[in-house]
Image (cartoon, rainbow, N blue to C red; front, side):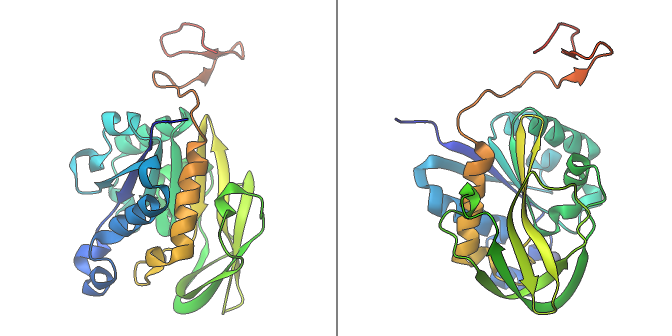
Length: 255
Ligand code: ZN
C-alpha cells in the first residue's frame, strides 16, 4: 500500500560547525546535514527530510513548518538559552499533539526537552575521547532493528549516570565508557499524543553521525517516533478542567 512519506525536519544549531574549523572539517554540510543524510539514506522515498536552523526566522520552526512535520530531530548545545520561549512553547505543543521528537546528545539540556521531562536532565560528562560501547537492552524494540549489539564509538564524549530524567517508558540502549561509567543512552518517552526519543551519542568533535550504526538508529527512531499514520491533534491542547474532563480551549467539550 502506498503511503505518504514521513515528513522529517532536522533542526540544527549550526554554531560549532561555523565557529570551529575542526568541527567543520568533520561536518562540511553541518551536523544537521549528516543527520539528514543518515535518515534519508535508510528511509529513501519513505521520508521527506528537510532542515531548519537556529539563525533562521523563528529558528526555522514556524507553526506552518511544525504542522507539516511528523518527526523533528534536535541537536543543540551552545544556544539553548537563545532559543525563543515562544518557539519552545510551540514545539512542546506540537509534541503533545502528536509530533515525534528525537533529541540528540547535548540536546538533553534543550529547553523543550527539559520541559517535556519535568526534571533537570543533567548528567555526568567528561571530554576525554572515551571509547563508548552501545548495548541493546531491548532487542525486540523497533529502534534496535538491524543495529549490532554492541557497537563501538571509538572516541566520544562521556555522558554518564546519574542522568536526571524520569524513568523512560522504554529503554533501548545503554552505553558503557572506557572510564567505567554507564549511561542510559537510548530512551523512549510518551508525552501527550507524541513520542520522544533521546539518543546520547553525537559530540561535535567526533564523526558520530557518519557512523553506519548511528545512522541506522536515527532512521529507526524516525520510524518509531512517527508511529504510522494516526490521528494528530492540530487545533488544541487539552487541559484538565475542574470537572476532570478534557476541554478544548474554546470551551467546547473535547475528547
Ligand atoms: Zn558534547
